[in-house]
Length: 143
Image 1: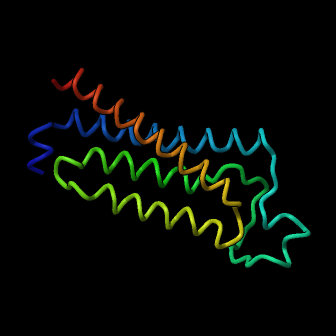
Image 2 (image 1 turned 60 degrees about the vertical axis):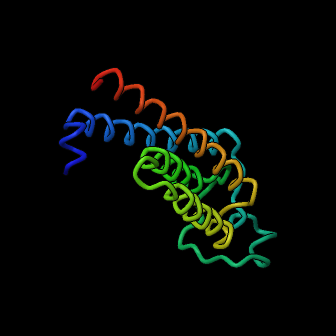
């Protein structure tokens, strides 16, 4: 609450707005890619189903690229950069957690490795871009 008092409710509102925009952006762009490429997931390929460990409850239609990898990496980079002045090593912990989330998608049979690499890359770029947006808006409207 000291940090809220220091920066004010306006800064908190900007932060909430930017995070909501970031999640919406990464999620919607992921869906656009999935529909555009229309590549079936590994769990949806009849010739692969007997060779993979399929754990997920649902398979989903298309898999390029991973929304879980994208969203988790965007949050990791955004949060890690935002909190870097207070927790220097947090970004590494968040990055590692995001990689575990991303790998889990391959492990359960719903994504190919390229889906994950592209999702992580897009998420990292998005997280950085929205971090810069938050810094800009804070500087412009808070001072």
